[in-house]
Image (spheres, rainbow, N blue to C red):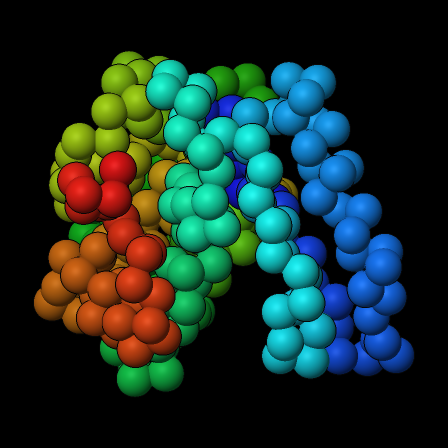
Amino acid sequence: HCSNMRYGILLFTLCLWAAEPGIDRAKLQHIGPRMQGYVDQNLLSGVVTLVAHKGEIVHLNAVGRQTVEDNRKMANDSIFQIMSMTKPVTGVAVMMLVEEGRMNLTDPVERHLPEFRGQMVRDAEGKLRKPARLVTIRDLMTHTSGMAGMPPASTPELYQKMDLPLADAVRIFAQQPLEFDPGTRWLYSNPGIATLGRLVEIHSGLPFEKFLEQRIFAPLGMKDSHIFLPAEKQ
């Protein structure tokens, strides 16, 4: 599921794999009323549900509101903020460039981003030391880099405003000590994924959002997918 925290909207995508023997269309009729129940209880402001089976959309329904301010009705094609579900898209972008030979998953990040050179790790006592090994691109992909989960406390507005170019934001992240030695633990890391986005910029010669637009969204016909949503689609 993907959530828009600002509007309290939850989007459910239900996928039934081709291995299923068939679809009970009568049971599909229960989905809409169940979702409407969540709306009626003010647990959600609006919901879109979709069920696909063997390439066919067998259920598509929208209930509730897409905005609470003006009671705009939810539509089947309402645009949602998918937030961290952009991470798989970033992963696809990275792997496209890996396939093109621009970089390898085993490469140390500092080979491509010199600002990561000399990065330290903070031990259990809070002291800084050299990490057991360097952070690799694979570590960033798997959230095992040791990079913090969120931007540093010294710049709390960075995560809220998201108004810095990737180059500037990643430069700040690179100056922060690691939470643990790379590859030894798992920690969900937004700065780590942002670093992958910066790698895409460096090796493609395009701003990250332009790479996604030209190499992923446009070829797949994803006409309503944007990093920066056009004003007419707000």
